Length: 181
Image (cartoon, rainbow, N blue to C red; front, side, top):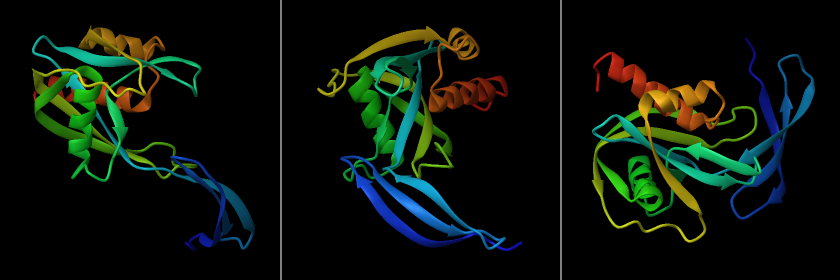
């Protein structure tokens, strides 16, 4: 099968975190197609699970929704972060005041394959340790401790709509049921 070929990538807009491009593509059938492409930094996220099978979620305002969402701690990878795992642990500390003694990566997802290039590495964190919360001054976050089964029910009731959070919760539940973790 013939592959689609990118003929050009034109910068249309640059903001503080993203760049928006117009891609000009030649399709296998010879037609020229224009697509939007948004370049963003990669990130990492972590589901923190305590010894009582409760998960730590953060409730924060998201301008895209113009509402609050429930999510796992997450953030963009900064240049000083050596690995996505370091990003996830940093974000856990900043957003909850807890960090994991043990981590397991459960995946790396492409958040919106038709538009963004942003990948998020997703981790599970257990054996939690507490330290002084050093919150990011730009964020207003409430930390919630929710039993795992209740959090899973919140996916199906529409209370949890964040993709990385849904993936992490279901991955943890699956791995736990198979006694892998």
